[in-house]
Every structure is written in structure tokens, then in C-alpha cells.
Image 1 (cartoon, one colour):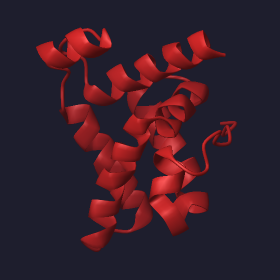
Image 2 (cartoon, rainbow, N blue to C red; image 1 turned 90 degrees about the horizontal axis):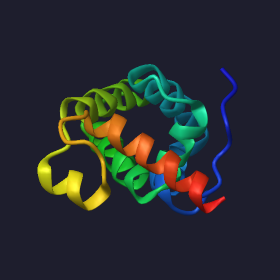
Image 3 (cartoon, rainbow, N blue to C red; image 1 turned 180 degrees about the horizontal axis):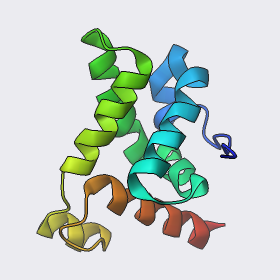
Image 4 (spheres, one colour; image 1 turned 135 degrees about the vertical axis):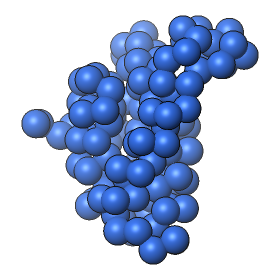
Length: 117
């Protein structure tokens, strides 16, 4: 897989994950693409967004509990796939209700990046 580089080194996932950024970035792209069946560019759009920052917070929580980096990213990916878009989130973000959180926000971010660029 061709791993796209971040376009947001100071914020989003990359900026939030801090000292782990270089190692975590390709692992996160691969985990998200595998879990969501979306494109690497879609995963990058998500990770570069404020939602990617929250995803990084989930990873950091697991790192602080003693998990290794890959295990923490995999656990965060599973957690975000287990959560589902509720009615309020569907209305606020125009994401179909019931989708896994990670799928919904990766698609949402990819569409918004296409609109912006």
C-alpha cells in the first residue's frame, strides 16, 4: 500500500500522537484502510482532521495503559468501529445513522477534503 504523508504535522493525529508520529502514521493508515475498506487518501483526510486528533487520544490512552503502538492503534480502530453513528451525529455531520463511527467519519472527511481541494 502506498502510504500518503500527512498534510497536517502540527494538528490532527500526527500532531497529537507526538513522539510516536513517524512510526504511528503508517500503522494507523493501514489499520483504518483495512477496517473501513476506504482509500489511503480517505484515511489521511480523517487522520489530518479534528476527528483524527480524537482518534490519537484513544491511541494515547492505550499507550499509557502499557500497550505497544501497533496494539494501541488496533484497539482504537476496533473501538471506533464498535461505536455507531447516532441520530444527532447523523444530523450534525450528514452521515447515515448506524454506520460504524470510523467508517462514517473517514468518508465524511474524505468528501470534505475533496470539496475543499
